[in-house]
Amino acid sequence: MSDVQETITRVHHEEWARVVASLTKRFGDLDIAEEAAAEAFATAVERWPEVGVPPNPGAWLTTTANRKAIDRLRRENKRDDKHKEAQMAYDEPPEPLGVIDDERLRLIFTCCHPALSMETRVALTLRMVGGLTVPEIARAFLVQETAMGQRITRAKAKIKAARIPYRVPDAEDLPQRVSGVLTVLFIVFNEGYLATGPDTDPVRHELTSEAIRLTRLIRALMPNDGEVAGLLALMLLTEARRTARVSASGELVPLDQQDRGSWDAAMVAEGHRLVRERLAAGVAPGRYQILAAINAVHTSARDVRDTDWSQVVALYGQLVRVDPSPIVELNRAIAVAELDGPEVALATVDRLSEKLDGYHAYHATRADLLRRMGQSQQARAAYDKAIELAGNTAETAYLTRRRDQLAAGPSEAS
Amino acid sequence: MQFLVSVLDDKTNSATPEEMTAITAFNERIIADGNWVFAGGLAAPSAATVVDNRGGDAIFTDGPYLESKEYVAGLWIMEAADLDAARELVTEASKACNRRLEVRPFL
Amino acid sequence: MQYLISVIDDESTANAADGSGDVDAFNERLRTDGCLVFVGGLDSPATAAVVDNRAGEAIFTDGPYLESKEYLGGVWIVEAPDLDVALKLAAQASQACDRKLEVRPFADE
Image 1: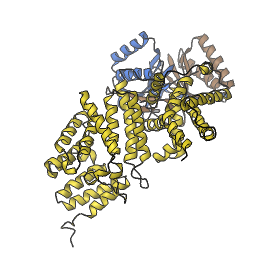
Image 2: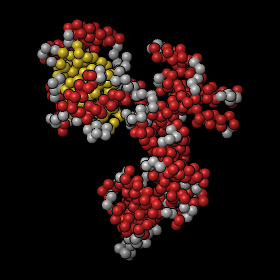
Image 3: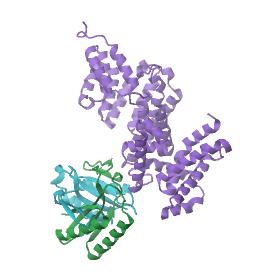
Image 4: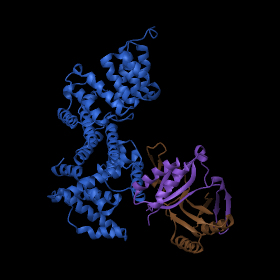
């Protein structure tokens, strides 16, 4: 890649959301903002290799995008007052930086509005804030490009017609709305981390790294929010193990068998720093902070045998109180198995059968516990069920090998 | 008694300028006659949101509660002395807006 | 900006109490705050009729234009500056009438 192309990629990452946000504010229309921003970046791709990168690329892009938006409005011969006002406002001096940062936050809250479906929020956030193209988003979620395009178009139309506000929510609504934004980012991350589909890569790095980038942005905009810090730490401590998590042959490598030396030390260190920061804050932690703390315990052990399991079990106990879901119970039982043995854990796990029967990890956990207890036949049945339900290729490969390594049960010996 | 008069269509915002003129003329007349309570064109059904706050923890769902090819694209609320008067009014309204209408009394 | 808030009824709610006191109090508050444009409960869908006078010869058909399990039971028309405010009103309305609601904007002209 040439220097200019690299610069354009970097500037796209840094400036896209800012350009879209400032145009949305000026023109009161996401569609106009998105199109004009895309045109401005296309112009940069065309012109910068010839004439060089301007001294202030962000300002150049905003000015160019503004001009494109006004061109479009003139073309469409819009005469309503808002647009006239916007045209008159064109030569105003740029706003101070703080206000513009605030606008990116508005953009995020608009894209993650609770009146939009979750899949729409995810798509819209990746497009408007992340700057991913429609084909990129469609590929990432294994959706037809036209369907993804329609989803985004419909969302923009709803935002406009129903007047979804372009603002940071009131203090009263803020915690719930921030939590909604973090859910969207966590979905993006997990879709990258636990990619589903028979022919997909087990880990889609572009989604995990995009989720981290966007969470960093929110963190910069809301530095005092504990759950934002917690989610960022959780993502970093998970992403740090990305390469160690899948073997060369494409098989999942569970935590206890990973080469800990291949974890990304810088990401682990940053994640630990964030967890320590939250501990020092002395505020009761939410879900993401507790999950991050659990991951911090795991990534602090140089060898799996050094893992402080009592700490992990205690943290899961705390998590159960914040989020009493069967999946959290399941994960707590996995930690209990290390502390009190598989029999104790299995008793807990079996109580979850009704709620988690359709969840592959439930059956994979049972299979592993039964294997450790020497119950090969029952373990085999559980592995079969887990393989049937698992959607991730690396996970299927791992479970299949584990099943095939089981000692033949007495009834199967012939 | 009051009636809800729903305009049925499979498109949004599809009235032609001639239809708009006829609708305006009709509205002016029923306002003068005291039959007009409310009139308005609706945004597309996909701009709707379903709200369920029966449990005290509001759940929002994107989109209309009912997906159908034909939907309510706008509505009138009219005041009429009786059912016959209402039928007369909606007959004229259907002609003015050039659409099928559903009429249903308020309690 | 005006929003149509439709009350969604089905078999289970058709004859259920709506905590009338709550609805009256809610309407009163809407009125005081100047947000209430219209409110009314509808007669059953069976009382509906469809009229088609496009061709100049009115045809009446008994019954609603669409038969469905869930149907419109009543409407509010409210005035709100944006969807956040409209959704807040709708959440209060849902609680007051103990039913699901749909919030749909009127076309902004």
